[in-house]
Length: 483
Image (cartoon, rainbow, N blue to C red; front, side):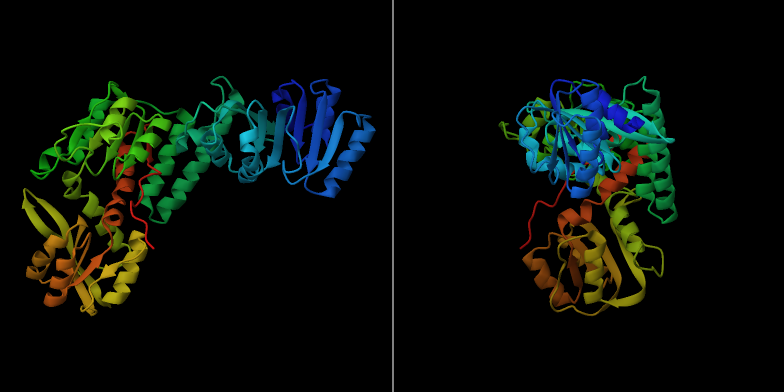
């Protein structure tokens, strides 16, 4: 009566009392649970009358009308969960399962959830953990040579945590579950195909990420020595190259000697630390230093205090990352080259000696109106808006750029015969000066000109350590809201 997928669902039912079978279709699962004696009662629901009529025939066929209650319901909407011990939702997409559970999430404590998503299981797993629902076990079921996952979970109000992308895709199969291993291998091959498609389209950072994600899914994550990680970053972006006023480096050192999970962020805020703690990250690597000015006291709401309390390390790479060949400004150069053709090789903007420079100057193959250029910059950086100088709406071709806050470099842009300057955090006096000296300034925001470097950092780390769980913080967001 049941295929392997539904047999697995039945196997994971607790047998403590009343079960709800959402989207029951023919009520085969409900009948099996009652006839086997596993459940004293089953509430079988469906959103349409047609499937309920089929379910009614099954109930009558097996003479279980006194133990099977048929309910017309959109998900759990018309179902009273008092006394319910198990909820089974099988044969639906992961996102649909989320929409069914979401309205009742606060009524699920103590209920055994058996969930069988047909699609997007990784989204379902992430949502469960973010909703204080932990996965107790997960099994793979083989139906006609196709593998399905069946998740058994239970609400736990005290245990809030978040899954990394790698964990959400890998699932929670036992180490000795051969079908679980096969399931992960299939997921790994799927991710490899995604990687190949991204590489063909020129999206190298994303291609590397999905290839390494597939490796972690099939072979598991591995730890890296903390000092080895720091030495590698120092080789790529030498900390000794930072400006004298800067404070880049290993700023908070936890008691752990190894790293298994890394969270990348532009700023180490309390929200980023909370995410790192919930994902059990060992270190946060940020662009802006978490310690900059001398600390005369540390309070409970200080990010440094929270890092120490959560035993999370912090490595900060600021100006050393800005001036590195493929650092913050190198990423902007790649982004611009994807939209504009250059007439000659980019040249350094501010030369710092020893082959290092801050920012670049590019020459466009064809001149462009500054208004049109601003619209394209908005798309490239994904910012809410681009501010540009009032009196310099003209054709431009020679353009300087510096990530972050480079308004003070306007004079240098003028001396190097630039038509325009791209940066962020432009102050009033710089706008006045730009209009006076006829240089178009484009303020794309401090955050938006620097945050893209996180994708480059992820690629660099994953290429070196494919099985290190590296993730860009979901909380690395623009600290400003625009009205």
